[in-house]
Image 1: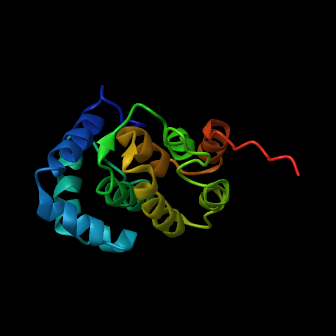
Image 2 (image 1 turned 90 degrees about the horizontal axis):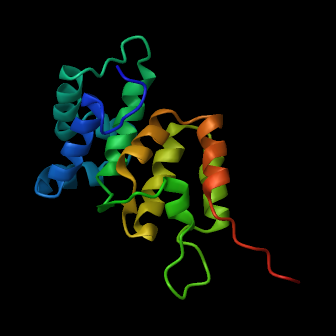
Length: 169
């Protein structure tokens, strides 16, 4: 298994192709969007079909079974993504609509994501903020960040997020 999803490896290509086809597969998208937990995603037929496809092209997490749960989390979140963006997840969260004075995801909500105590909390938190960004995020970057969530990714998010300036009191 390659370390990361990208457009140059088979696993990354298949994940991106699956996401692109999800627009036309409304039933699968609906099942995944209704899944309120990582376990619900992992037990769903759409996830299991994708999992088999990815296994056939090189996904192998036998020595790290927690990666299968993280893959399920990523897949469940990707069902909420409407548009693939070139912008990293944290940058997408901090972007402002033209004329808006606040980022899509507030500083407080963003900090709560960074402080998520476990993958279930992160899944739930990101699931809630995706609509705030109109479902626009970099598909493979989000999948990678969920897959490798830890201090390194948290720091990357913190450095990438455009923190609002403090107002003068």
